[in-house]
Image (tube, rainbow, N blue to C red; front, top):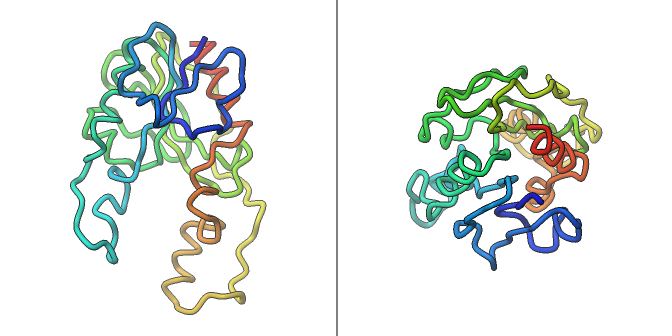
Length: 203
């Protein structure tokens, strides 16, 4: 069995015979073993707009996720498994995990427990590149993944709907992500889910 922590209700981890999904109603912070985990802790308070962005009615606190990331990384370190978070997350440095190279490849996480890497979910079925950092508990270096930039399936057309130079610049940085809904951006593709499951089984 593998416990899937902080996952979407009725999402891609539900309905699998060997996966125990923990959505918001179960509160994954309470997970106490004994199986290895795949952890998707919330990232809103750890990313570029952790403060809420320019239109926020009040400024949030960096890392104020009610202990979700701390419990997720603790579960991986204790029970085994893998954790994923957006590339460049502040959670890595806050929890003393080495920042992986952007072009891919596993490196030691710096805690004598795990390995970390950067991989683009676009190489595993996501509509956007969606650069992602992984942390895995493993004695040996995990197998190579599909490293480097993903090929974008949905090209952004700059002649459709961009009203300012800033929108154009943002589209160049984020690609099709600019046109996806929040739910579409957050979704875990089946192929990427299967990759994480296989990495846990191999570790």
